[in-house]
Length: 286
Ligand SMILES: C[S@@+](CC[C@H](N)C(=O)[O-])C[C@H]1O[C@@H](n2cnc3c(N)ncnc32)[C@H](O)[C@@H]1O
Image (cartoon, rainbow, N blue to C red; front, side, top):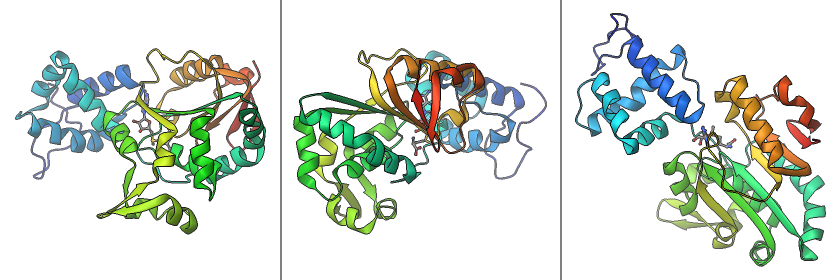
């Protein structure tokens, strides 16, 4: 352990946290997920992993690092603990509006004549993003959502983190979370269960939630018409973003659309594969 501390000693701190502890954790998380954890994140790492040390009955970070080297499940829990899962219903709503106005009319026609539509919410966190899309499509019409389940429409929603995928699948949210929905949507699509809101089964039936690490291989064979990959690439370096966007382009139909987060950009090395068609909305061109 180096003498330098990543976090200065503090009476509140239960465990020492050195620079080399920080580096080892950051290297492991980068290799596993692509997420960068620079020095400015030392406090976050400490706060989130101190809980894991306690849960494992350990008293120092080097022992925890040795443990995650031999225990793949604990390594996955460490990565899960270090992901930032912030999301909300109708976040960056202009993307859902773009989808409804420019994409859905053509898709609806295609579905009505027996055609196929595939959408992927990549890094969907606890599910607010794909559920918002379902509500955008169905509007105020429960039967429209039910009809989709009988057409060749699939909405795949994936995330690296098992804990958020479990929340997404359950479709139950604290009332503070569902308050972000327009009131009429909330009234129609939510049912109060104890101190939570449960989303309508017709919304849940159409979405396939899966654990999936964007850096690893993807089991999907068919191309997507639309990909939402919002507010995850912000944690990646340019090389990872370029590789990922190039794989997205390979996994999209010609002319398909990808939505990225408000603070994200397409790196120059892959820019020739996309054309900007709106605010952080891009079309695959090659
Ligand atoms: C800030 S949330 C964004 C959620 C949603 N897309 C939105 O914009 O509101 C970022 C999500 O990316 C996921 N993530 C991070 N690295 C990932 C990776 N390598 N593969 C898949 N998901 C990843 C995290 O688990 C987290 O849930």
